[in-house]
Image (cartoon, rainbow, N blue to C red):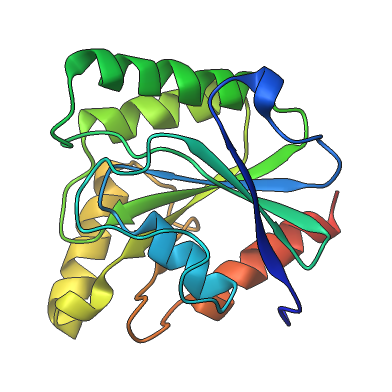
Length: 196
């Protein structure tokens, strides 16, 4: 995918504040500090389009972007181990589920996991939500540059077993540092968009 433009549109919490559903939308979901913003920035070849932070839980809004004026990217709030009040965590769950359940132009979810961590209960809950709403999704394992090749092979296999993925359904390995997986992710997205 040749990137000609990538722009931030707006942040929102409630469906009433979402931008118009005028183009196919791809959401990026995962726990806090999993590298969602870095993944988005790498895909659109911009350094700071999506704001990155070393502090887990910094993204507490749903952030909408437009790429090439033809596709919408959505950075969903991270969940999990962030040091935030329980009430805020509860709000995040409601915010994400509201988005997943009402957004009519949502065509795919990029489900992001840190290759160094086992899928959490929150990750498995999100999987259940996506299956419940019959939303297509695929898994991306980030931060592969932090492991050796042998560690990467072992962790990938273990995570795929924990997620109970069918043998044909592979995770995509990704590193924002080396750009490993960038083309693979675009390939999956473009194939899916071409079938709509």
